[in-house]
Length: 146
Image 1 (cartoon, rainbow, N blue to C red):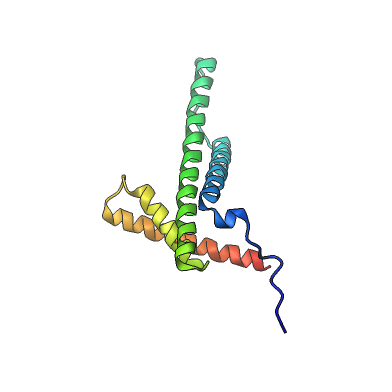
Image 2 (cartoon, helix red, strand yellow):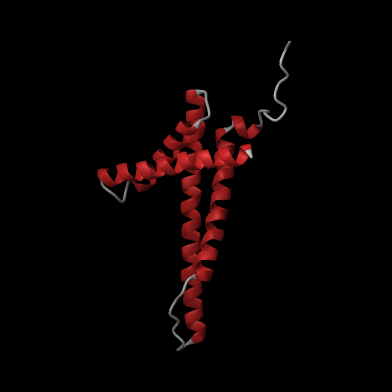
């Protein structure tokens, strides 16, 4: 007796095209970073200068907007690197498992930390990023199965 193919597993354009997937993840990561920074700025306690209200408000808004765009840029870049690394690893290893997530987060963290830390910091950044990727893979599997 022949087994029917799984109707829930179908190949889409995003499954086969790494560039399209990376583009979508970059935009979504940027939006998520911007919204997270917006929330973090809303709950941040800050000292206000009540001298010249118009100038201090303009200064605070400019600083907050720069901070929000900076966080959005960081999330977008991390998402792009992660997506590219994961897509290439899936094609290279011909499987989708926790190892791909671990290695993708590890490589992404190491690339982003390359300019700012020495080799020890680079290794620690890679290990921390890889552990984050592995944990997120298992959390995703847990939520998808229930």
